[in-house]
Image 1 (cartoon, rainbow, N blue to C red):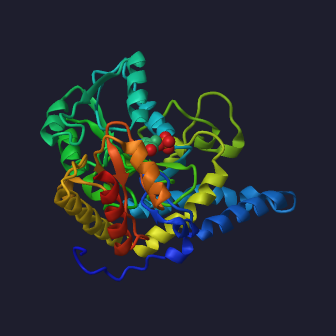
Image 2: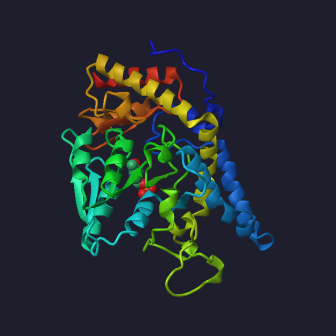
Image 3: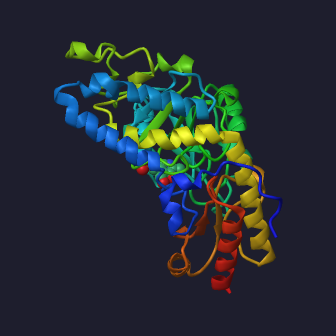
Length: 387
Ligand SMILES: Cc1ncc(COP(=O)(O)O)c(C=O)c1O
């Protein structure tokens, strides 16, 4: 029995050939390919091929970065002109880190959490070499970082709080608005790594007053590998000067000026070199589909689905490696098992596609294209294997 009758949502399953292979629950890792992505990649090739006669940059390629940026902006409640593509989420983070002068500032503290993605951890630890005082807020159970603990770590020496909005390892969703309130009270900024939340949970960077948000194409947004993006609060854009930079960030790109950069006064000042054009093409179709279905409809559906998985897990005595309260959870549910790799392989043999991470167990991620019947079948199959 499902929790409620399946709502009328255009799941657009026929647009995703990958779904013919089985029950696809891997959106936290690599989302399925929409048919339109194949067409987009062919357009990319055709433009490239015909560049001798028709300048591919002028015809389409330059405009793509803004189009992708503005489409992401709409999904996160940001105004146009506040999001710029990045090679990947790690570089987006490095671009933000390069705006801070840790060694010469009174504010040297960066607050992160133990549930963040390893890239973030690696990058912030490396900033210790240039004077950053990195404070990693621990989790007692590897599932939740208590909000009070995060808020207590933010003080007058903090320049930045940089943390996952939704954790890749437990699906824990932090109360972003509360973190921003506390940070702004003491004059610190907040960066959300929203790779695991954009496209599956509601995000409103404007209402929450988030300063930076970053993510990428390949998971919940059904884009190809890889394209990252970075949102910067509009009134901050012109105050920041990333040291990780390049000619595309220049105020007058085609003047080819030498010497110190004169930054663009738009969000393009966070760019570096030539954009990843195939990545941008691969990203657009998924973005369009998510926008057409609607981020809130997808988020509501996700809560209903993940709640169903949590209830099923409880009924079967499985240990969750995720919060049980939907308000503190993203789009995935993690189920602990001592044989994660074996179970993942056995599920794949039965055409149920999930994955696992060390210490976490199974990661299960329903998205808009799944049906309720699929979720039931996947849960029953997992149940047969976990006994
Ligand atoms: C939350 C989160 N942040 C960052 C990354 C890394 O992104 P990228 O490979 O684009 O740097 C991932 C990838 O799984 C992730 O889940």
